[in-house]
Length: 292
Length: 324
Image 1 (cartoon, chains in turn yellow, green):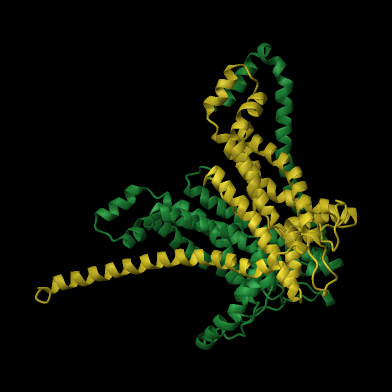
Image 2 (spheres, rainbow over the protein chains, first blue to last red):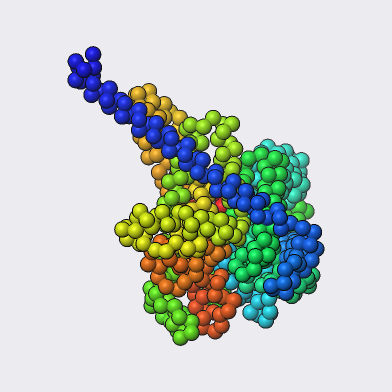
């Protein structure tokens, strides 16, 4: 029939073409979804393949050998990362939570708008620039690199992340809860500290953990602040090593055993970050996700 | 707001609430101090960088911004080549990440059932959790080797007649940096564009489907126009991230101060030249690198502001928390 009726044939041809375009685009979407997932699996696969052979007790208990002499570990970098990340949390979390509470409680005006804008700007600053800022502020004035400068740089990176989540979580607390507290005669600060903040706490903790997983992997702000250290130290006024910085150092180095150790360190680092991220996901649902 | 009126009412009856005031005052001061610290830090960053860069600003003048001549041994500095390197890598990443991200978002929103959409979108978002330096390590030893041995030679064989494609593929180079940045900003762009696409009203879709459109026609005629400026905002957020990305790029871009003449040539971005040269730099060289950082800061600042405005516009002026 189609051969006899030219109009029908054209319509059918058009329909077939539309159908084909639809199929092609559907295939493109599915293909893109596959392509987007592949890099993650490739990275995880090579982390396991190259990293597992390098894992050993020596790696986490020994200090690095003189360059070129095989063996040794990265004990100093592990401890250094631990110290600097904890100090960064100690410095950054109070400021960030204060800022978040300020925004949720007193931020529904022009001033709050400015502070919010500043936080967005702060979140967008490249981490290497943060490192240079702390370099100019602390290292130049102090005359030497130090772990405390490194922690300060990390703290600047985590403040906007935690402040935003704190504000968001505080605003999610139902107004009726606050009003119940006011009705009982509680002043505002008690209402906020005893009622609203505890209610928002799980969300805030999520934010802290996400910020933690973010700064664990940051090396750029540490390059010019904590510098790095061949030896184990707990002196926070001295240069200190960190895991990401040592990965950077070893990745660019000439020795094969350095590369092996870099893979092993990366495996440790990514495992820690993924465990934090997955447990946040499991505990608090999908509302908040890690974005570097 | 209820809280605001509660506060005002308290003021109207001071006798009842007088004893509460010191606590409230202290509380305001403490939280306000948190906000003040944040503002001071931002001002401090701009001031400190401008201050440290001042010797270079006065010595190199305005031509610093466009001169492509960077020669520390003769104290000649120009950031032009690094701006070019940054632009090529970020814009490449922006274009490809946006195309893939939009297709993935469409797949997640329009095609996939939720038991597939959820894990897929979570897996893509996990890409954002991997540290920059690990991307760099993988970029050198896995992706770079693949580009040198397999991908690069094929491209050169077939496309060397295309301008800028006739290079020698190495482990590190401009193309490696482009590719690693595409992967790195993909989760940022995808997360935002997925939310924007999901926000397209259902009635729009149903209206076009009822007229007999295929799924793709429905997407092209309603979803994409509706989501366009939000997707643009999402991709610009990704751009901001690509411009500021440091270590992964430093590891894979090959580090050369020359303006790259093909896509496999080594180059520098603004962030990577700082990371690579700052430790050995002294005096004017150091100051010039800080000026590079200042320019980088201004660029990311402008990009971020544009992106936020676009995303805000789409969400109807309501504030959404866009995490990166």
